[in-house]
Length: 588
Ligand SMILES: *[C@@H]1O[C@H](CO)[C@@H](O)[C@H](O)[C@H]1NC(C)=O
Ligand SMILES: *[C@@H]1O[C@H](CO)[C@@H](O)[C@H](O)[C@H]1NC(C)=O
Ligand SMILES: *[C@@H]1O[C@H](CO)[C@@H](O)[C@H](O)[C@H]1NC(C)=O
Ligand SMILES: *[C@@H]1O[C@H](CO)[C@@H](O)[C@H](O)[C@H]1NC(C)=O
View (cartoon, rainbow, N blue to C red):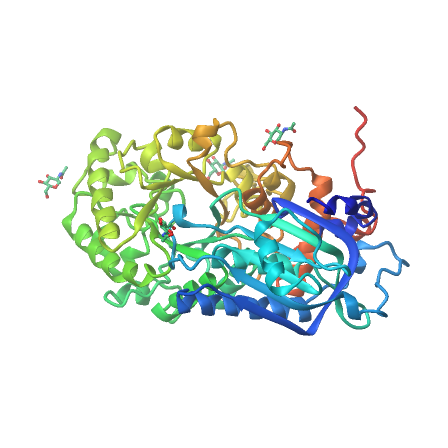
């Protein structure tokens, strides 16, 4: 039944196009025939009985977006052809090779909003017809649909759940190019794709405390994520530096904690962000970091914070200015947390059943200053920290969410949390291993590979030149190849690797803001996106190669620019135009 193999010879000639999709699907076969799509093409969503109307509408909006992108936002691929080559396909005789219908079939109506990890299914199949129609395949699903609709001039998108359809529609629009004169075509027909992600959690962590990001900038991050098949936005909304989150029952938090009047996310802004993400198959996991990284709470509630903005020797009590931790062993702090989570969490629960309570970089010295602790001794602080976390997590759970914590809580402090808590590791492979060994599910994403902010140099001012040349702690910059080389399950046994839900790239915002975010994050984050969707290794178990990845990453970069994101180039243009000629010689 497998017929598409014939196309592989032709594929080689079309190496520039063979690439096309980012991230690469689990299984992807294609030919080298041209198929057109145009405004008369009908996109039809066939949903099963009983599908939640809300999910039905979500899929229809995804179809509208894919249609718009496919028809109006295509690349003319001149950057991937040597100068002087006429790459446009002939436009005559288009009739028999135009896609007349795109049949979009959801298979199951058993789908809830905000699925937990174990309920998720993002798999899909996608077929483009060639001039001779859909080729025979080994897909029973497809054969059933062909019986119903036919083989000629029809493209098929099939998925068990809406999440798969949304991913498939993104893939679909990446298979097409713009003709220089008129029309949109794919030079890859026929296409047969069967795809599903390697990891269930594919995240981007955005810090909106160290710089202010308007809502539009956040939505642009979500766009970039969707195009690279990320599915979790970690919304690190508050930190020491500012509190840009409206909490209606405690208005002072945003009034006093924001950088400037009005620079906060209102409850409706937050809802807009969550809905925009949900429409693109992305759940937003909010983090309110604690008990460290909370100096901004002290602006509204000074009595809850110990060691507030100690100057100039903040270095003794904090990783960055301004210093300040929530007090431990303090019932006022506990009451505050109860009110905070009772207010914030219920509004988020329709979209995501997880909430991140932080827990990184707790500074022992600062608790010498806390009247309820008066000690910098790990052993003295630990039981208070346990009590603090238990209280915070009870309040989060009571409102329907499962907590996330940063790795320090379980690895440095040894706090014994229930095993449904998800641990986010950032300090390297040993941390991932440590947390899975304790039986936790883990989100990976070490600073050594997946911190997008590293390599910008120091942002502190110094009194003399002893820090010259002012490198930052985690430089050099993590280039896309370094990001691509990281495997979240590195060094783990197969059993341990099952506990790795996935990973996140991090946008800590000391020196990134709405103006530089596009070129800082994209397309580098996309390299992690492919590791998370397709896996660091290919189906044969070999590491994916740069020569396979770079033309495809270069192409998704061009597409992102077309879609309105000012992503950076990854190679000289000459290298795109002369694929294969920019390899470092392998003399071994
Ligand atoms: C619906 O899906 C859930 C998991 O997502 C599963 O546990 C349940 O058995 C399914 N129900 C039916 C009727 O298939
Ligand atoms: C912790 O809080 C309790 C109850 O408020 C108090 O009795 C105890 O002295 C506190 N511990 C310290 C070290 O202050
Ligand atoms: C330069 O500044 C650092 C940090 O403030 C200080 O430790 C060091 O002694 C200074 N060196 C000189 C030569 O002044
Ligand atoms: C494959 O990549 C991993 C990192 O993900 C690296 O440790 C390993 O050395 C690479 N293997 C080969 C054969 O290059």
